[in-house]
Image (tube, rainbow, N blue to C red; front, side, top):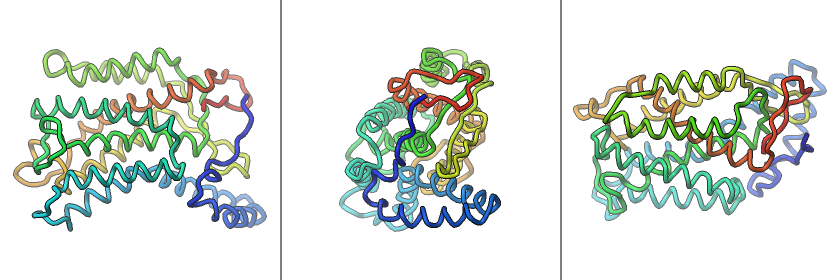
Length: 306
């Protein structure tokens, strides 16, 4: 069992000054009894989730804000402005140590994986980017890779913030094979059978017994847990909501939206669920390389990866 580490927030200078005040508030909640402590823990859970979504939340806000306010006749096209803004945001996260360089390398890999798929999918007519841009590959403006990077950023940050540990987790080789099969199917299904239902079934088989254990509030010393498959589904659902907002902001369009905005079909929820497995596999590989151990079913406390 690895020893507890100091709160990751303590390594982030922009919020370090708030730690003492938070500790005082937490101490009051503990003294007030279990109900107050439970409410405070729930609030901490929400705040930490929002903090983990920082990159994705800022990017989504930029999509909406530029749709509403960015000048259409600006010398710098909107998509290129978004690329510059995303690069600046990534630089800030690294400079302030909100993300580690090791995490950034994994996120960059998912960025490249997503961009390659974007180039293929737009060539096949799955969706389009209707506005002009200078920085693009084929029909894909380069800022789009940051939408995939936002998913990787969330997973890396939420893993660290909640100190994820697991029981009954499948081995790394099985997860990486599943991720590779999912990625191949995103391309191959245009030419042969779509195997997504087999991939859903394989995912359920691999993770059906897996629980993720997390700690929203270290001072209360209580671990919470949930089925990891449920966690995957919830994240994919929020991504689907974000995609609806992104298409409403005109960042990209599906064929059925060219005559006017319409909701993204629920079938895309399944696609994001599978795509998120790829991002999860990359982040898992990062943590598994640090601590190559998963807890046994009878362990008193789940073993830590990362």
